Image (cartoon, rainbow, N blue to C red; front, side, top):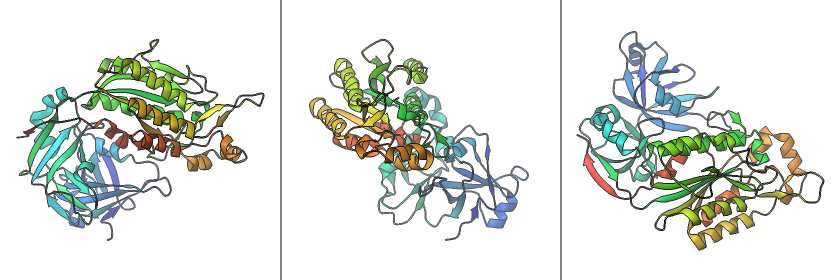
Length: 435
């Protein structure tokens, strides 16, 4: 099917907005030209500037501006939605007409926002946040795959929906209408989570082969810092069960960055989150960067959990790393990072789960293809070494195996949209209507 509009014949322009809504607004002339009626829906497809990486698709509501508010060949979008699209230089998009649309009869949402924030906004939720919104459902997706964003980091998980998205055979837009019955599921806190975030700060993390969703290049350590910022920011909005917290950085050795000058964990409050953010620049200052010992880092994190975790709380480690397990080379006159077999770190993680039920979620920073493309000298240097002695090549396979062995999740990139789901296991609660 041919697109209705593309980036070659129209421009997307962000406009200030107080709410997050997936809407494209046409000028009256363009609406007449393309046969658009206010309240129609479309599918916006964006490309990815990174070769061989698929773009994203969004269900959007099509609107018509008053005369003079929107220029011909320009589609305006809310500022918050435009930021979500994360357009980079040279990125293209296509807008398609909706072939299949279904009105939602009833919808139960689970809020991932703090309860104080929810109470403050509840009177405005129905009209400002929900009515007119839409969900794009692809084949094989279930209710658990769907969410409705309401701000940069805050969103609602879809808990129940009628009609069910199960069985959809082609991309379908489901729309929230005035007559849709909307309910909120408010979770009770059942048990807590004690969590240690562990960040790789070794020399290999200085390589500039981390590519974000906009196609912009950064050092690996910047990618790790961004992921850490996302996790901390998510805690400010999410009704997560995280109770006690600590931050560890590691190279050849591991050091507790937060809480400072202590060997235990702290209660996670908004104040502590802000204090921890101020420590992020110190990640590379307090560790021996000439080497990377993943097992040592996990051991330090596990020791914190054993000392400080509450008896009934779940114990979790989140490991942000390029995935290589390194030690200092002993047979040369200078220090260099040398990879040893990943089995040691994997087996250590396996033991942590078997003995202490510690789950280790892992986040990969970069990959071998990025190293080859963006740091060719380092890549060629590694390729001249034996496989067990390569100093700079990321190892997401090891990170994936650590997560698998500990019944945890592996994230192939520090993407905010994916990491947000790390905090969403919220337990049971009560349902009430949004009138």
